[in-house]
Image (cartoon, rainbow, N blue to C red; front, side):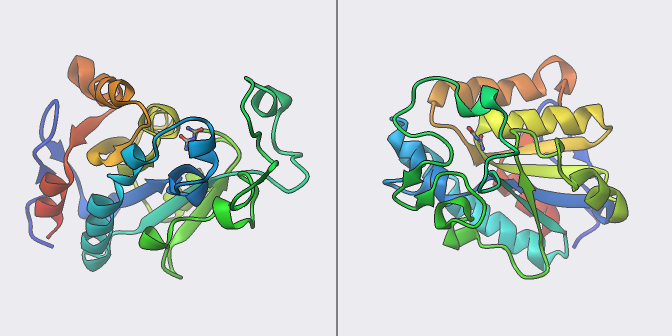
Length: 223
Ligand code: C5J
């Protein structure tokens, strides 16, 4: 890695110590991204999320080559749903609910094919995978301990969906004192308006939750 430890970002340059940096990849799971899966059964156009795959695969390659730790998350629940509060399980009137049989196994249930990460972004054997029952990656998980053990203070945040699990995690991280840079073309939403506004909200007011930059700028700083 070069000595250029800053990334051109919004609302200002993002300065980082490479020794305390990690790449967080949120919920790039088949249930959300595969045609015919849960996300699509909710009426969503998964093509909007799938635009993330190519730039994120390239960013993963760069991060791995630079020796930056990569942490993946998966949203999902135990087979008996004991970790899924009724407020989450019963909300709305979707055609399929968490735990129902879907095309790729029981929806958002740990161990099922659909719950796992898409092949293009499969974690390497030495990378941490955090299973989370909530939208935020800190809630009811070991993420805080993993970051502390590895002296991580700064996060490059990627994954889906921008306004839900990415936002919740960035807000949780911000409150815990982490600096977060959200990689704009490596996060995705089923709703273009939420993507636009979700990114704008992060960098607004001098960076109220963090910074935003595209993957070209991030990769240039890591190469
Ligand atoms: C959602 C997520 N949208 N990973 N999950 O339910 O953002």
